[in-house]
Length: 100
Image (cartoon, rainbow, N blue to C red):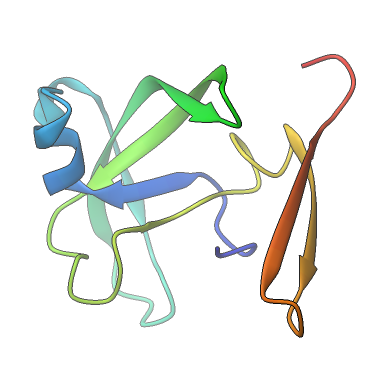
C-alpha cells in the first residue's frame, strides 16, 4: 500500500481485465517520485473489501506493472478505512470509518 498517493491508481491492464474502456475516463496526470507527469484515466469502480462493496474512484495508468500493479490512495481508500499495519506480524487490519 502507498499512503502517499492522492487517489487509487492501478495498471491499465487491470482495467482491461475488468472490461473498463480506460480511455473513456476523465484524463488526469500524476507525477510520482520521478517528477515526470504521466496521464491516467479516472473511473468510478466498486471494490470488495471483506465482503463489502464500496464505490470509489480509481485511475488506470499504462505500464506501471513493472513496479507493482497499483497503489491505494488517500481519497478512495484511506478516507474510507482506518488502517493498522503490524510489520512484525505481517498483517494489516482494516476498519470501516463511520458514515461510509
